[in-house]
Length: 308
Image 1 (cartoon, rainbow, N blue to C red):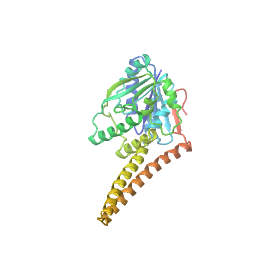
Image 2 (cartoon, one colour):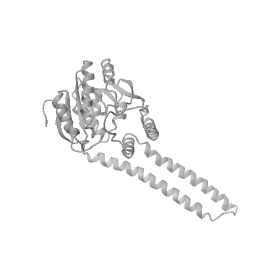
Image 3 (spheres, rainbow, N blue to C red):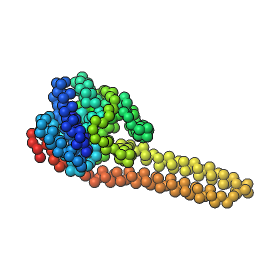
């Protein structure tokens, strides 16, 4: 059986549509399946729509968080609740083409254990958003050692891969990178990002920046190397300026250089503060991890054998 994990946050306009479309495509292909909607603490009627849909379609199950825990937590919760022999993750807004699930499933039947959805185009996004995305994935690709330029959360995973991800103890997991990092026999399926059919995107510029910073720091220590680079730069600058000052002193041409001193002080202070900020951020992430709080809290479930 294929379990389709569908994270949803304020997606009241898309629940019924997504369920009907995905269920229809998989039914026509003769694929036994369940649709698992994860309501990430929505503020609208998303959960009520999931309840209504599960009452009509027996294949639909739902999980409702006690509050918003983020998309990564919703994906992990869905994988943990899934009962299928393989699990797919797809966005509720249907920007990931559902018909590609059939192609992914056929590859799984051929023995592939991780089937990656790879973007052949990113749809109609702004130039600024595209630049930010390319920068983000360049950093992640450099940190992981494999190309994530067109990576997405649209994937199908064998039960073995799902169990590995679910049993990882790190609280701030980056699903998009970890699902590639774990290895296994991998294939890819290209897709074009579609326009959202209803509702609005929940990702603001600030949210995307937080998401990027959080995932880079959770998966890579690359930002920590910035501290080393800044230290080296500061050392080189100090050697050069120190050499110039020494030569001028020996030649009897030393100048007061008050402006130079002020600029050096400002530069060195900036380097120190940036370095402390980066180190402090990682210390904060360590603090969050060692507290051992759960990734998410389930308030209610529906569908399947019972409703809680």
